[in-house]
Image: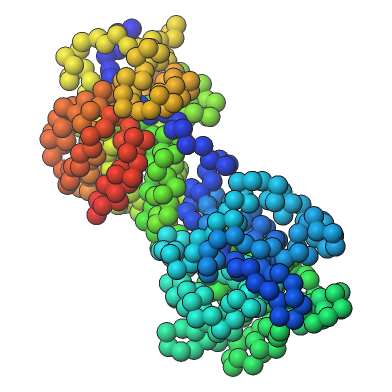
Length: 502
């Protein structure tokens, strides 16, 4: 045990930092707001209501989705004065979520440069959410562009939402057969009782017409309203609507629930990191992958933020952890393993072949039955010791010497990334390297793919090709001219290769 021969696969935290843990890991949601306008009845500058953007944004972010904001013309948004928590009227002074959003320069930057709707690719979003405010009554009513966009997205079956005066779009939006989307549907929007209150509050008529009046003229639809300004949202199929500004959070939570149910439409990738790494190894690609997929990023025991002491952790512990992650999904998954995790995903696949759609090895160990990482290395290096490792006193944990780490792991990484690798390096359990896999005929029948790294100093390219040849069942191999971390060095190219395996 004192002279363990190995040159292991590595990956550590990327320099990409997220606003919150796993933010964006579930994919993207598009929020659409009105461009600035001038009310013809009041003369006020109008646009979007703060709470109808900020409250749903908060819910989506907390649920692990990233959010883009668009408008018909793109550019800067105008917030309705009464919705501003710092407005002199103090109508929304209680709205601390909007106040926090307003005080965050990074969040407000999203409202300064909204995407132009015509330039948005709707296939990149798992849901859309139309915000309300006073602007939509002038900028969206009978607007063919927003109506067609909403209708086309709705007909994909993905969650499609609108709240408050944003529901004005539903007065026009029709299916391809010419029928209104809301025919046969339950839905809601800003109520007449609330319009009455608002008019009385300011002492004049605010809106040019009322949504409830027109909604009730649409045949075979059920427009529902709750008590005045009570939080109220309705879901009918994939159509989700909210009554007014106090309903944004509730409507957003219905969207999140619908998205959970909608996961079945997407392929599922379970990503397993290598040695001396944690889940953040996939940080450069996981959010992009999640745009059109379900993505589960595994953090192995005794790695990263997991505080398990690693001395007794081995292959079986890793395998159980990955199996638990896979069981969260009803259908089959694509199991991706980097480096040392090639052994892990092989054992998982042998134990539950019915749940595996395909296996993708990334600069990874591809074992035969009865092999371990250690035995593969022993054979390749001829039992020759390599002087880059350090052990704890009882040889249960192993580290890479600081001066060798960057060159072995990622010679083509940025200086900043190399410093990060050194800073967060954590001793690795030795047991997992020595534990042998038990493979079977079912494993041999599972489709396998491989992404090779030609400049690899950790798992050499020659070793990768040797394992692929000896396995004999790998359907396709794609090469990348990188070191051991292709998803860090060339994330876009890596994603393109990862997703082309069919």
